[in-house]
Image (tube, rainbow, N blue to C red):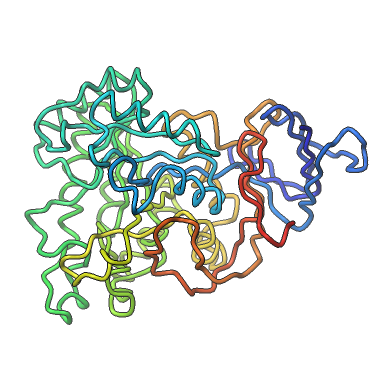
Length: 427
C-alpha cells in the first residue's frame, strides 16, 4: 500500500529536518519526503497531518513486559499494544522475567513472541545466571541468538570484581551493559526517598547516596574498561555530575531518565501512596531540576519509561510490602511535552531526539530517523492537544498520572508502514 502523510510538521532530530512536508510510505519504507499532491491517484491511503507533527517512531530502551512468567501483569502482546498507544514503534525488554532471560531457551521464547508483535520488540539478556551476580551468562551465544545487550535490571551488581569481568566481555562483543544503580546495604525500605516524606511516614527509605555511590564506582569501571556502559533511571542530583565527569574523562557512558523522575518528587507518595513507589525513588525538587538540567546539556542522553506493570492487588499492599514500579508507555510523550517542552526546558525536536535518535544509537537500531529509504516507523502527534490520562491499554493501571490533564496526544503510530494505533477522533 502506498500511503501519503500530508501536510504535517516533519521533525527528524538526526538530520535536523524540521518543516512542513509530505511523506510517502511504500513497502514498509519511506519512499519520498517532499511536497506532493494528495489528490494524485497513486496514493491508496492519505493521512491528513495538517496541524500535526510527524516524527520518527518513538523508542524505549527500558520496559518490563513480564513475559514469561508474570503475564497477569503484562505480556508481550499487551505491552506492545500499550507501546503503540503511546507512540512507540520499538521497545527493549529487560531480562528479569520468570525465569530470567539468562539462557538460550528463554531468549528464544521471548523472541518468538516478539516476532508476532505489531511493533518491534527486542530484549536484552541477563548479565548473571539467575540474576544472582555470581556467574556470567553465556553472553557471546546470547548475543548471537538475538540479545541486544545485557542487564540485570531490577537488581544491582554489587560485586565490582564480577562487574569488571562482565565489562571485559561486553567490550569484546561491542554491546552495552545497562546498570541498575542502588546499593541495597544503604537502603531501608526501597521505593521511597530517605527524606522529609519518609520521615513523616516513619519509614527509613533509600538515600540518594545509595545510587550515587554505585554510579561513581561504575563510572570509573567504565572508564578503566573502555566498555559501553549505560546507566539506567537516574534519580538524584549527584549522579549526572558523576556521569558528566566520566564523559569528560573519556568513558563510553550513556544515561537515561524516566518521565516520572523529571515530572514528580517525593511528595507524590503523600497523595499517590504505592503508585508513586519505584526504584530508584522519586526524590526532591532539587534533584528533579538537576535531572532536567542534565537532559538540557546532554549529560543524560535519553528518556526511557521503565514501564513496570503490577496488579491492583499487589499495589494495594502496605507500602513496605508493595512492589515498586509504574506503567509509563502511554503517558511518556505527553509528560515530556507537558513538563519539559511547555516550560521551555527542551524544544520539541530536542525532546523527540531523546526519545528516538539517542535510544536508537545505544543499540545501533535501524530506527529513530526519517529519511528516504529508511524504515516507515512513524509517530504522528498533536503537541497542543490536552487529554486526561487513563483508560490504559496495558493490562495494569499502576500509574500516578491517571486523571491528570496532559498536553500532547498521539494520533497515529505506524510501524513498518502499518497503522498499529489510530486515535479514535481520527477515524
